[in-house]
Image (cartoon, rainbow, N blue to C red; front, side, top):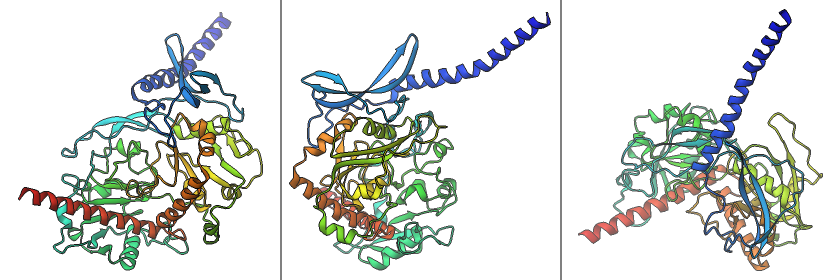
Length: 498
C-alpha cells in the first residue's frame, strides 16, 4: 500500500511539472503562429527591385518561409532556399556550418496609422529581438511634413529673404559631458554638439538660450534621466518642434529609446518629436520627418586619407561577410544565417560562428582571416543588422572603401535627405541568398562610380576623421534646408490665395 502511495505521488509530481512546460510550449508555438498569420509580411515583396532587376522568383536563387503543420498545431516557419530556371526549381545545398532554427512571428512593425491631430495612441503589436510579441501603444503619430499639428513653422519665420541660420535650443546635459573628448568626440551631449555647430557653421545654426525663442529644440545624449522626465518639460508640448538626436543614447538606460516595448508599455512615447535613431527599420521611419543618424563605426581606418586615393585597387574578394549568426529569431539574424549557409565561390569569403541555443557557447570562426584585412580586401561587404536593423559593419565597410550591401528594411543615415542610391546595393529579403550573383553582375565602371560616391558620403556623414560633432552639424544643415523649403512652400501657397 505504501509503495502504491509513493507511485501515485511520483505521477502527481510529474504531472505538476509537465503542465507548465506544456503551457509554455503551446504559448510559443500556437500563439506565435497565430500572430504570424496576422502580422508578418511575406519576404517576397511585390515589385521589390534587388539591384535594378525584376524580382522574378521563377528564375535565380531565392528563399521563402514555409510553415510546417501537424494536426491542430502550427509549427514555426523555416527558410526554404531554392534555385529556379523558368519555373523549375531545385533545393539549394547548405554549407552545414550553422544549424537551422525556427522563425517565430515577427515583422517590421507597421507604420503608425493614427492622426497627429489627436494624442490618443493606437494599440499595436511590438516584437522584441527574439520574436516574442506583446501589445503596446504605438510611439509616434503619422507626421509627414513640417506643418501643424506636427511642427509649428511660425516659430521659424524670418523677414529677410534667403537662407537664414535656424535658431536652436539644446536642453542641458545631466552630467559634465566627460566623454566628449578628442580624438573621436563620439559621446558628446546635445549641448556640446550645438556649441560646436554654432561656432563652426554660424551661417547654419544660431544657438539661443531660451526655449521659447527656438525654431528647433534639441534633446541630446543623456539629457534626461528617463523619458518621463523629458515629456514633463514645460516646453515639451507633445514633442512639437523637437529633434531627438541619437535617440538610443539620450537616457542612461539603453532600453528607454523610441519604439522600445519597455517604455511603450509604460504609456510613454516620443509624440510629435522628430527622432534621430541610428537603427530604425523602413516600417517605423517617417520619411521626410524623422532624420535618422549614423551608427559610428568601432573601427576607423587610420590610413583612410591614403586609401581613398586608391579606391579602385584590385581586391581579393568581390563579396565578404565575417560575423556571428545567433539563433535569435529576428529577421536580421536570419539574413546572417542565409549568407553563412548558402554563399559560395572563390571570390566570396564567408566566415561565421554560430550559437545554436541561447545557453550554448559560440562556435569558433573557420579561419584566421583578420576582420579588418577582410574589409580592406573586399569590393562589397554584406552589412546586415544584428541586435537591431543596423550594425557597425555598415560604417566600417565604408571606412575600408568597400561598398555596403544592405537589406530592404535598412534606412541609411539621414535618409531621404542624403541620397545613398548611387553608393549602397540593396537586396530584397528573398534575394539575400542570390547576393553573390547580383554583385558580380554590376559592371566595373559602375563599381568605380559607387566607390567614389561612397567615399564622398563617408566624409560628409561620419566626418573625416570620424567625429560625431560633424554628424550633428550635418543634421543641422539638413534641418536648415527642410525649414527653408517649408517656409518657401508656405509663402508660395499664400501668394496663390491672395
